[in-house]
Image 1 (cartoon, helix red, strand yellow):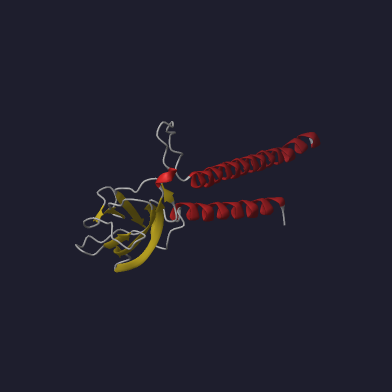
Image 2 (tube, rainbow, N blue to C red):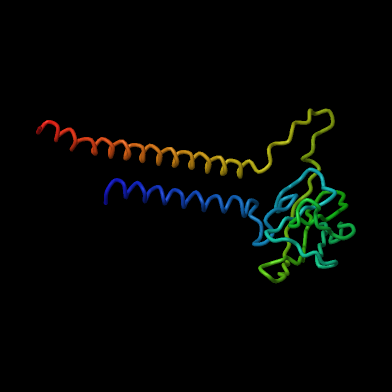
Length: 199
């Protein structure tokens, strides 16, 4: 196997790995279920205060059918804390907005049944997840409130790693092909020079 073939094979493998990492990072950033790709608050997370609404983002658009989407949010005592009906966000047809009113600490369970628009057909999805409210995580009165850390820092790290690897791969490919081009141009001049000396 020539050096060129080995280089092309290594470059192909690197690009394949980068594409796979990109797909995992972008399509499934929160480790969510097959169709629910992002939720706020995130599944399994602990927040210092219960939000006024939940955001559920899916990998397909939500069907624009009244009553097609049903979400129940219950506290650790089994009481429902969701208010009104969930609605599709005006900013994204894939995001469902669920108003809630929860007080106190404890686990909140989110159980949802939604109707997604698949490839030419409707797809009903049913699943659930939990997150926890713990007010003791909030700032104590008199303490300085720090700015919140950047969300999804681990995802940002993966994306930056992908960018750096892509840059290295592109730079390596450019250097390799520039050397090949330079070598070919030099070799094409050699026969002409030899013919001049023969004369």
